[in-house]
Length: 41
Length: 274
Image (cartoon, chains in turn purple, orange):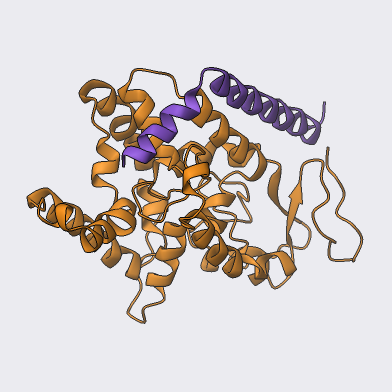
């Protein structure tokens, strides 16, 4: 498989992985940890 | 190049948007795509590095913050450093001071990875104290100084550690006045997180090997001293596009994986290389 195609696939996998991590973090209510710390500061 | 000319206005707008104050009650739970201290009285978003330390201190995995950092990295690599980071912009402004300049090689620029590992992960995990934030010159500039100017009760608490933070900031200001973007190159842990993404990000630089004459003009204008014609997607690149603007042969192009970004030299849309 040519390099450009591999890069394209790896990039799209990374985007999907990152979105999954954000959704996972939101499910674990991690946004609240960020917000609470930010407000405390 | 049209895109490269938009960088200064974008940097100004970004600094204002990240410190827009009025939205902070709603948006401070969102990590911003730049090193912007969330203790700044006007900060509208959370600093990703401060947030990561917050999770590490609590012995939790920062899934949410790393997801945001990963998404930005996958899309633009270190593009945020060159286009959105207020402290990156501040370094560029200070570097305009007309004094003799010093070009430093990239020999020790792995130190940012050491700082990421030691000050952002290991020490906060062990001590439960966000040590990078305590020493961060961006924090001193955006939060330490304004907080002291604004609030009497904070002014009364000033001790030797505050003056140490100010001394670190002054040291960096002196360094950035003679060398371009020293904090980005040797210190920034957020830059260290994004560096590996440059090789795989959707936004990328491509060099036309046939047009390139190896004149080295790209390296001369590069703020992070990269030999762009040899390594256009180097981990240190902040995607400022100064090389693309300066290239006399127009041999450096901005491309995206799968998305067409702008017309190429012949005026036809850039080929999607996916």
